[in-house]
Image 1: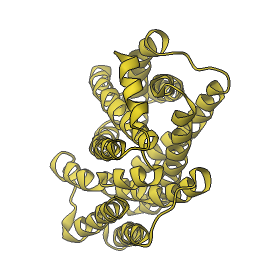
Image 2: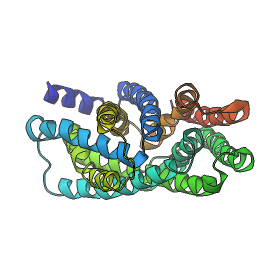
Image 3: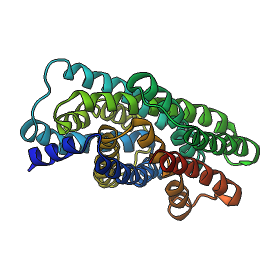
Amino acid sequence: MEPVIADWIISLEGTSAGHRVALILALIAALLHAIFGALQKGRHDPFLVRGIIDVWLIILALPMAVFLVPWPQGNQWLILLGAMGIHFVYKLGQAMAYTRGDYTVVYPVVRGTGPLFTVIGAYLIFGETFNLTQWLGVAVLLSGIFGLAAYNLRHIEVGRETLVPALWFAVGTGAMVAVYTTYDAYGIRATPNPFTFLAWFFVVTSLDFPLIALWRYRHMPDPPPITGLITKGFFGALVAFGSFGSVMLATRLDKVGEAAVLRETSTVFAAAIGVLFLKETVGPRRLFLMGLIAAGAVIVEAAGS
């Protein structure tokens, strides 16, 4: 079954049908990544949650990598090692931001900062270009990002002592989102079978945080019950497969920049999750600014169709 699916994915590259599939995959990635971020920011320590998610990713992905897909060849191993380093920095920055700021404060800045850098990287590496209307969409998106950051700096009262560091970590993590999106697009395009890259990607990039989480857990004065973490980690791993897998396939099928921008409609999902499940207060102004980020992404996609 897997070779048939891989052949189907390859056959869609550069076609109008591939563009539509990439659009659907990017929207799926948006929803799932908002859920993924909420899982990491919930009541448990973000380092612990990310560590247990990575344990489950290894457990679930390793059999597929070893038995179901062709093994990487030659420099494909080096590409995977590069992905490991890039995603480690991204995951570290994400955890640092989440330990210092609310989910609805940090997440939109992380996810919104990434597309600008991704668009630039896609131009430099893949030769992709945006038209004037698409750049207008990017401007709308960025106005929402920086407006949200300015609003948070002025009005958020809870945790103000860590708010500025949280925003800096969020901006830096957003830059790493651009780096990994562009790099992963290069990696999945450089591998003849896209599922070879995906399966081994989840194994290789998940080897680091379990060690950090274990060290952190052992040094906690009052560590949480492990059973709750295991359940959350399993669910988070399934969400990660869908989120990261969808956007990487989208970048193979269609333009990297458009997929990256459209994925940032996740800010709308993030706002809903933050209010409904994390009991955070968003308010009409912050909701409007998050909506600008999503609107900018929609303009970019619509103008490129």
